[in-house]
Amino acid sequence: MNDSHIQVRNLSKTYRVPVRPEGLRASVGSLFHPTYDDIPAVKGISFDVHAGEVVGFIGPNGAGKTTTLKMLSGLIHPTSGELTVLGFEPWKRDAKYLKRISIVMGNKSQMLWDIPPMDSFRVLGEIYNVPAGQFKQTLDEIIELLDMQELLTKPVRNLSLGERMKCELAASLLYRPAVLFLDEPTLGLDVSMQLRLRKFLADYNRRSGVTVILTSHYMADVTALCPRVILIHNGSLMFDGELSSLARDLAPYKLLRLTLLEVTSMESLKLPEGAEITEREGLGLSIRVPRADAPDITANLLQTLPVSDLTVEDPPIEAVIDRVYTGGSL
Amino acid sequence: MNLRGVKALIRGLWLSWMQYRSFFFVLAFGWMIPPLIYLLVWSTAAGDGSLGGFNRGAFVAYYLVLILVNQITYAQVNWTVGDLIRCGQINHILLRPLAPVYDALASEVAGKTVYLLFDLPILAILALIMKPEVTFTWEKVGLFLLALLLAWMLRFLWGYWIALLAFWSARADALLTLQDSLIFLLAGQVAPVALLPGFLQSAAIVLPFRYMVAFPVEILTGNLGRADIAAGFAIQILWTTLAAVLTVVIWRRGVQRYAGFGG
Image 1 (tube, rainbow over the protein chains, first blue to last red):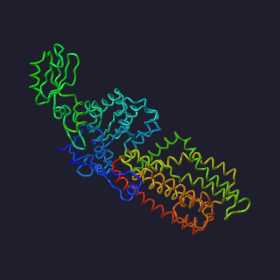
Image 2 (image 1 turned 90 degrees about the vertical axis):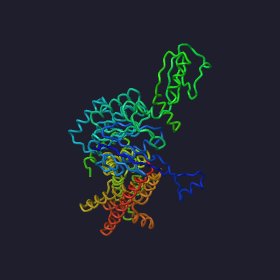
Image 3 (image 1 turned 90 degrees about the horizontal axis):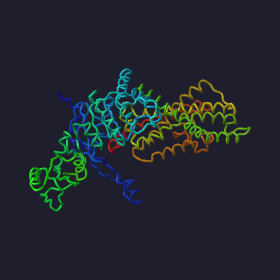
Image 4 (image 1 turned 180 degrees about the horizontal axis):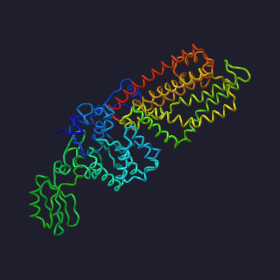
């Protein structure tokens, strides 16, 4: 059975960006002979997303996440490659397709700013031709899950950022889309609002079986919601799999955490080649070692140092991702 | 066509605009001022005689109807289309199962009803004070309404294709200002087209601007002959068709470019 909601094969997007030269003469010249640079934003990525999956789409700024999301939703046209969502080619923006997907952009609103959310919801319900009974049922369910009853009658411009995001989410789900694209839904929200929205998304996904692709810079969003992550960097897919194996696959090192029996001077600490102290406080010590050498180094340390406790860990996910983002490779 | 959606959009936007009714009233007041000034200038100039076939009462009738037509045909939405494109708000509009032009049309319909709440009482009072001289016939009224509808379509579409140039240029709005200036000059605002000097009058008759404002006003309050009215409709329909074609072509290419360059 093929229950794939999203199929992406060798998808690429290259932007043509006009080059504006400096100086009056050159800029007048460019009016008649415009020159362009080709900027590859996404370079041949492939993946599948199955019905009901929640996939975290991560990568540094400019990695190509939003470009990919825009191609998936139908806003922009792929330069090459194949892409189907729910069996449709998104860029054709078929009304039948648009009624089955939804996109929430953390920095763009689809609410009418000056009227209460309830009025915007009604407008959207009509645009998407949602039958009255279903509209009420869906809205009641979402209002309850998001605990937003008291927001419904205030003009949107008077709501806080977090309250507005609740409205955006509710608006995006009114017509029960099968696929939901979330582009930085927790952007700028405080910690407790982030927690609430995460809980809501998890609950809603469980209840409705909606397929979700989420981009976020907050790793907590991803760890809380997405069993699977896709990491892209410089437009290429670097990792696609379970979040728990990301560190194992991508980090070439392990972290040894030691507690010593007595204070040892730095000089007497003779570390084997490749090992590096990352943190030291009192009797506690963190040492980063190449993954392959971890067993040998551990044995060596146990022999040479007065160790009371030792654990071997994968590095924290943020640290792994930071290395990918800043180093570009591992 | 998704009529349900359009009706709901009109309602939603009307509710939004009503929040700002005082702002819209101020806008409407501002648009009323230049024709009012020219009304006073021309009716004073006419004195007890007549100028180019207009006596004082005829000038009053002409300009009061012109104020109404100018407001009904003024497509304020075209000023916001460019911003939607530049700021990426168009993203949500593109992803709705409703052709994006309906968003602009809904905004037009919703906006007009707010302006008219302000305009109609003021015009009624002005008419009582200034005593326009005009005779209406059913035929004139019917032709006026048809010309008014076409004038609105022409002015809306003409401004819309210009506004859509925002897909290419960040400052396409400047062309809307140019359009407003040409309307001021050639669409019977600064003076009825019949009173313009020869070459301007010829230009006014072939260019689209007269057909955005002056033409319906002339039908209702002037003495246009049947041949003039028929020729006027022909030119008006021609320009409206051209504007519609331009809108469709520019929209398609613009969205294609937007899709190519990214929002």
